[in-house]
Amino acid sequence: MKFGIFDYIDRRNEPLSQTYDERMALIRAAEAAGFYGYHVTEHHVTPLSATPSPSVYLAAVARETTRIRIGALLFLLPLYHPLRLIEELCMLDNLSGGRLDIGVGRGIAPPEFEAYGAQIEDSQEVFDEVFEILCKGFSEERLNHHGKRFRFDHVPMVMRPAQRPHPPFWLGVRSEHGIAFAAARGMNIVTLGSNERVAAQLAAFREAWRTRSEERRDYRSPVEAPLMGAVRALFIADSDAEAERLARPAYQQWFDSLAWLWRDKGTSPPIALSQDFAAARQAGSLVVGRPDTVRKQLMAQAQSCGYNYLVLQLAFGSLTHAQEMHSLKLFHAEVMPALAEIAEAEPVRP
Image 1: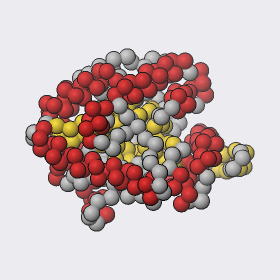
Image 2: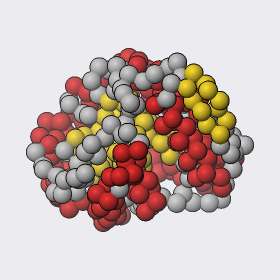
Image 3: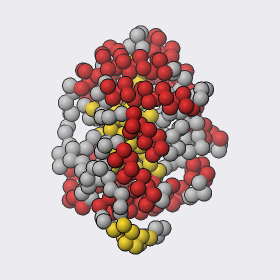
């Protein structure tokens, strides 16, 4: 079992510089605790995310750390010029000493696309073309591509990543299409939602990974044994009552930030997460309590869901930096050792 952090960096009633500084301290502590990866989101015109440019933020993270892998879950490919993105990703991989993970996605929020003058109806088509260009740009000395939206003729690929042939790709899976896409291209994956949903998606991915090995060879993926992650919001305190007292309003504030842009447009976010604190805990997407309570829940989850990468949302809503750091300390000391020993229930084979 490996451990990571998934970070929205939702806005708080404090200077943004303070949020960034305190998050760097949390990431350094996670690295010292032996966490494998740190993943930040990309969202626009919403209080849900203070990292609308993941590359800028991750450049700072790269220089604040030495071992933990870093990346975005995910870069919204339809909102990028692919050549610019290739160059920025090469910069990040070298700035981090070859620790970059590249999460990609097409986006699901129409208001974010509207703000950029883009059409979300075209997002899958644009995503597919940009991803194809990324793969070419990392692997070829000269970029040649004639597509519907982009054309490159013998463009020199001067910038090269530190990891060869390229950093690992990641996908946040939501559907059968995403599962098949990731398996055919040799990508690590993450998902979220109820324990039942996570278990079903990971089982489907295992099967897709087995049956798509021929396609995978064409993409020269560096991933041999994929990480299959489940995102879980987590808060640990010294007692169950204290953990619930602090986490309940924090979760509500975070969910309000999540839904803010959708509500501003008179709609609701189409996500597999519940606004209700109790329902989220029942589903398994939110884990709250004292260390032994959390340990029992996560061990049961890992065995029933079959994930080999636990991706924790450690900082959210109204939690203070001190509370988040204490939660991480308790997780590291009293929960993480037991989880680390869990063997993958059904290892993925080529």
